[in-house]
Length: 114
Ligand code: DGP
Image 1: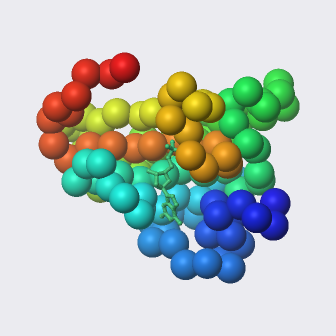
Image 2 (image 1 turned 90 degrees about the vertical axis):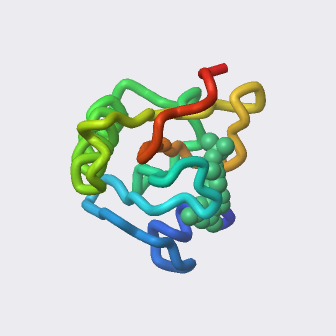
């Protein structure tokens, strides 16, 4: 999508601090980190939100989680632990409408979920 900020990072039209990329996903550091390690894993193809997923997307979504696990190990936070979050629509605080998996870690989580 032409007006999607994460599509522009995937395509290279705007710069992102990219930590990993393959044919299905791109991962880059969040511009406004909420933890010492805060990385966003996004599908290279545009999907607005979890609400728009179809059955054919299941391998892609699984791959995003495997990618997150590998990046957590690469970042040295796998052993101590990390949190994976996907926000969907207003009540969850989704602000960018291109599915993204937040990978948060590097310190004990202070806030309870919700
Ligand atoms: P969410 O609330 O789940 O939609 O989170 C969107 C995240 O995207 C938020 O933590 C900030 C991050 N973000 C927004 N714009 C940019 C950007 O241009 N570059 C990067 N790296 N992150 C961005």
